[in-house]
Length: 320
Image 1 (cartoon, rainbow, N blue to C red):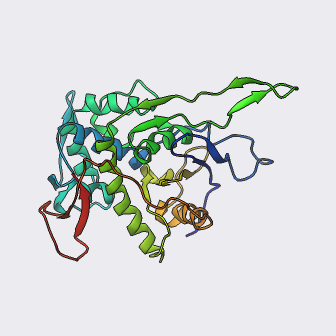
Image 2: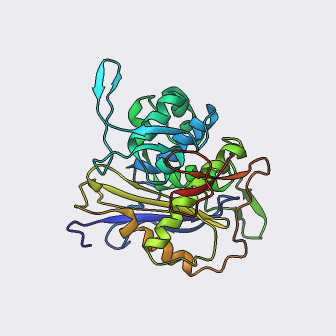
């Protein structure tokens, strides 16, 4: 893959429980540009917003075994017609919410938003501390919301932290010249969703990460993980945000003028390998997520949503 444009980007890694930023990269070369893309650049979220849509659907009573039909649709909103499509321009028929989120299907996500209610999704997104007011339009299902990388990582981290938002921060305290603490930073901490909801979403986000690892030939990744890719129109921004129990990291690639990166530029081939390279250098002491004890694992056929004990790739484990 070769980029025919001057692309740049940013990276933030933080502690999932405390929000303490462990690494921050604001661009490729500070001497060339002092613009901090991790904290200042605002980019459209694209598909990294979709987990929030499914969290709202679960709050409305669904679970990841629920199925919808992936098909051409027309949405009439305030007298305007919208005919969204999948990025592949193909449709897969019946599929579960689990498969739809894992493969970032657009049509099923829009149906999930409609089932949950546009206003409910918009209100929930603001609870995730995404910049509002967020208009309750059907298009928000596809991430038509501008955020900084810091805001996007903070929102995704809710799923790694059992439903609790913690404010990303890089300052713990300040001492005076005599060593006395004159300021102690206390990050914002908010329960956004119940852990039973967040942990169901996290479990499905782990399915996608395993597939990305297999594509990169990494079948023995040393820690359980969750992750989500995102690509905006014309590949203007490529996102990946992923977590292990000890670290949440988000990256984006894009041009500062928001021009298109080019054809066939996707996160799995561009920035996910960067995320993976970082995590392969780590030696985790905690390798498994602890899910809400009220949830139980079940195996389903992720096309029909029906219980399944098969061992083929259509059988996945979710929490209910």
